[in-house]
Each structure stands twice: as structure tokens, then as C-alpha cells.
Length: 110
Image (cartoon, rainbow, N blue to C red; front, side):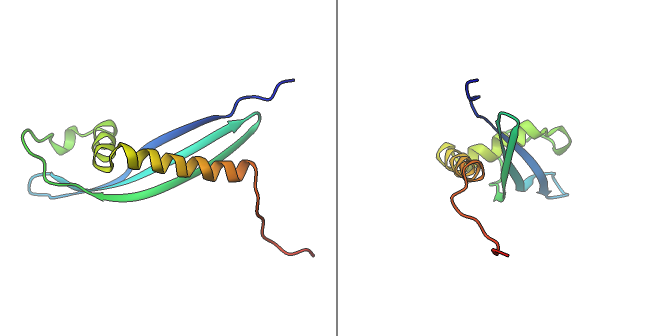
């Protein structure tokens, strides 16, 4: 039986937003990035959390109550930049590699 091809999925989410009550402008995004890899019947997971300060928006402002996770994830990824997003996803992939094929362990022999 051939080995199954590992499938890795990355999921961005917004954990919290900080905003000014006077105008609803979001100034800090708290985000998570989760990675899950399925290899046959085995599932490996890891993740990252971060906070990001946003500059005040220029032009049309989306009202706070009209924000969606997709909009804010887009802001977050744009602010981080494509290279940083790729670097974070690569780091999580490396962590999954280590879980799948560990090279180190801890414990005691008794």
C-alpha cells in the first residue's frame, strides 16, 4: 500500500481587536495562525499567536460592526507582508516536521 501524501492546512483567525470607542477604528489585531498536517491516520498540529498595531486608515473607513474575519485577516496579512507570512508558515511546517519525525526527546530512563 503506498504511503499517503501529507496534507498541511494553515488557518488564520482573529482572536481579538482593540478599537477606539469614539470612531470604531481598530488599532490592534490579535491573530492566530494554526497548522494541521494529516499523514494517514495521524494528525499533527501547531500554531502561533501575535499582535499587530495598525496605522489609522486613509479614505473610506469600514464601520466596526461591518468588519468580518476575512477583512481583518486581509489587513493582518497585508501589514505583515507576504515574506513574513511565508516565513511564519514555513516555521510552522518545520515544527510539524519535527512532530512527525522527531529527532529529540525528553524524559528519564526509569
